[in-house]
Length: 331
Ligand code: NAX
Image (cartoon, rainbow, N blue to C red; front, side, top):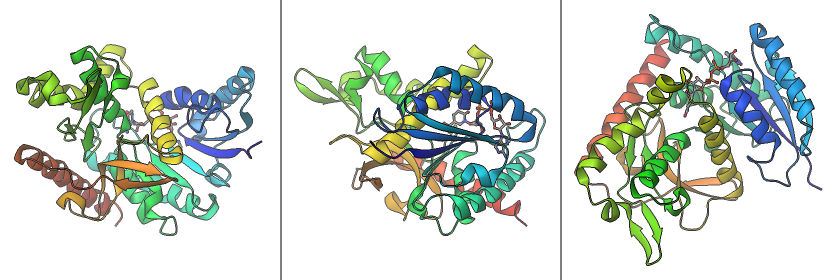
């Protein structure tokens, strides 16, 4: 039998946490034969709610779940974890300045970076979900210099999955037959959902999405804005932000990273990179990646047309500006 893997979820008493921890305990993230020990961190005001989640995990009697640590102590939470899913953060509240929200999150990610660096297992893989996800991940990277930068990522898989879902609905094909969309850039409304290389499995082989949709107006307009603004649409409908889809996508992100992407398929991940596609280095930016043996690699050499180029640059500019704002909060 496999040794249990310790998985940290921060913000575990929140909405996404509540959807995510049962998925992890069921094997959705690391596979149906991988036992897990869940480490759940939240802040003192949420301690009682966190304990309630722990009680429910016990009550659900998940066969793969070999232990639960529910704590408000960052050191205890980080100790020995091989996977860290960072969902906890400070949300933007009405009337708050961007700089104030950024400054709260910078402080959180700076201190949690240090705890992970000192107490997590060697080679711990980190996924930042909490917004601003790319910049929180960048701060975490800066303050955990001994964690390989290849091991610090942020979630854009939800946006990726939303793009697959929109193509599937439009063409009335199963979502599992659609692949290789790309989310470029920031997990924000400047992200660029790109279908130029996406395909659909048909009885006659794989066909480009562009050819099957055959409607550039939709692809350049409504498709992009629907994906970019899907988060807001969910809030409007549910009066709460996306949680089950965020949790499911976080599992997809870690599963594909650890267990590998299928041959011929890529996924989107926010990663720290080397200036691929002429995007300025020094950012956490979402790219198409393939994963093998626990290592992601950016898919290289995809042709980028003029329209796409502008969109890749626009979202990079926003990230550069966010980075400057985050750094200004450090002084
Ligand atoms: P909730 O407010 O329901 O939960 C957040 C939890 O984090 C709370 O329980 C809070 O007490 C806890 N928390 C706050 N500060 C903490 C700290 N320093 N250490 C540990 N825990 C802390 O938010 P939820 O809906 O679960 O969303 C969580 C985060 O995900 C938000 O930042 C949200 O913006 C972000 N999202 C990111 C997405 C992505 O695709 N990257 C999509 C979904 C989501 O909007």
